[in-house]
Figure 1 (cartoon, rainbow, N blue to C red):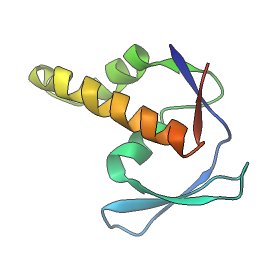
Figure 2 (figure 1 turned 90 degrees about the vertical axis):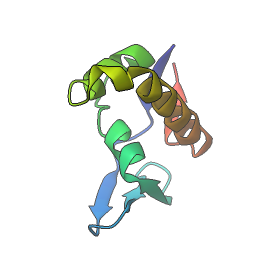
Figure 3 (figure 1 turned 135 degrees about the horizontal axis):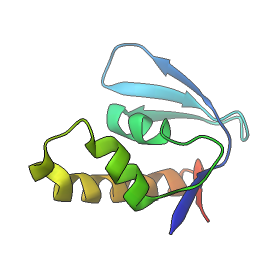
Figure 4 (figure 1 turned 30 degrees about the vertical axis):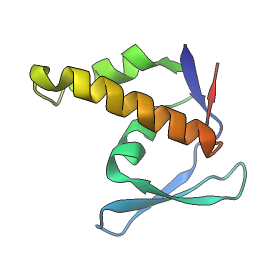
Length: 89
């Protein structure tokens, strides 16, 4: 399954544990975790599979954490779809 961002929004980081994300397509503003914002920032104008996202994000992590990362990315993707920020392709 591939995932696509609905529109490239704007990020506001106040150096706290959450990021403010403004969705320019819908006009909605969301509070995202640092991790959710990091996942979202991996998208550009092309859809990505969950595997592509995990592989890209895992480059900066230890290999033993891959299973945890896969579950975390999947959970974040579902939350971003529920917020209408991402869509399944």
